Image (spheres, rainbow, N blue to C red):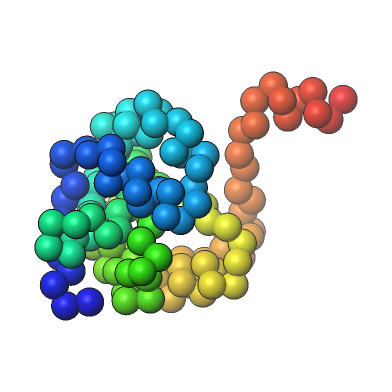
Amino acid sequence: MDGISIREYTDYRESEIMELYRSVGWTNYTNRRDMLRRAYAHSLLVLGAFDADRLVGIVRAVGDGCSIIYIQDLLVLPEYQRQHIGTRLLGEVLHRFADVYQKILLTERTDANILFYKRSGFVPVDDLQCVGMQYMGDAACTASL
């Protein structure tokens, strides 16, 4: 982990972003390059983890920065995982938005993911007597008919 720096990611470079997303199998994003480029442009904050000049991890925060932030796309190249880079990226976002009322995220329901986020202070929303909802558009409506 020595030599890994965390800093704002301000110059979107598609090749390195695509390398990160491909490396973790997030093809839903790599198949929508224009959407991803726009998403980065409209993010509240994007932090990168760098090994010298190589981008090895990224996290995005979206929202209003006052009442809510949504932590989006926390990912680290597989060969750099288990070195606390994700923890550092997430911690820096939480530090920068310490006064924000709600800090929300969605993740796959795996033991590793749940443990990772619980260690960072997150709790499943069902523990708070809440339910998360996702809009699925017209496809969801017709599928239930």
